[in-house]
Structure formats: C-alpha cells, structure tokens
Image (cartoon, rainbow, N blue to C red):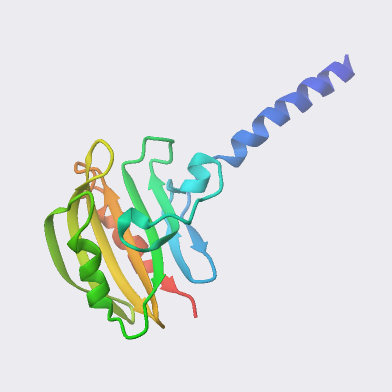
Length: 185
C-alpha cells in the first residue's frame, strides 16, 4: 500500500513539474542579454516561453532589415497575443546615418503601411526616430510603434504592436518597458 502511494505521489509530482515550469510570472522581471536589458511586465512572457521552443533569430524582423533579439507578448497564450514588444538590431554601415536607414526601411515596406506619423525620440542618453503606423500582418491590421536608436554603430529598434482595439490599452505598459530599457556597456 505504501509503495502504491509512493508511486501515485511520484506520478503526480511528475505531472505538476512541467505545469510549474510554464507558470505565468506574476511579478515584473528583467530580460538581459549581452547587449540590452529591460523589464518584462508581470503577466507577459517571451515567445520562447509561450511556444516552449527556442527562438529563431535568423529572420528579417517584419521586413525592416533587422534581426530580432527578443519578443514578448500578452496574454501569454499560443495564438492569442494581443500586444507584443520586440527588440531588433543591426549594425549601422560605416558612413550610413540612422535617419537614412530609418527612412529607407519604410519606403517600400511590404505589406504596405498606412496612417504614418514620424518624429524624433529621446530615451535616456539615446536619441533617434519614432514611427507609428498601421500594417496588415496575417489576417488583421496591426498598429505599430517603432523606435529607432543607435549606440556605438549598432541600431536598436524597440517595436510595439497590438491589435487596433488593444493598442491604447497597453500604451502605459509600453511606456514602462521603454523607461526600463538600457543598452549594456
């Protein structure tokens, strides 16, 4: 009888471990790699956590000529994301200006972008450019806000996108992420 109870308890434990590993964080936490760091809001998860598989970083981030470093989403359920934040990067070619690269990235965007608003942006000691726009990606049109910054010859694009009815809902959350963003020295 004790042996059966031990087996049942062990089996139950084995079932709970995978579930515990995929719990949704209830507190903000820090994402950090060798280049950047920022705070992941409570309830958000990285795409690797949501999909339980390693990231594929070799693709061109939304056709902008940059490589994705990390993406987080809310809610953290497969196929149910309403809001996303990503950081993508690329070296700035010698002699190339950030403004020229920024402008070029959106000139011939496929799929097309609409309702474009552009401006300058400052974050801590970094300055750059900002663009908001609408763009179809898959079935729905998504609202995007991309911030282009440069430090030491490296471009960092902080990109937020959400479904049209969720874009404003998560603007304060995005502001918190942006305030926490740092380029590591």
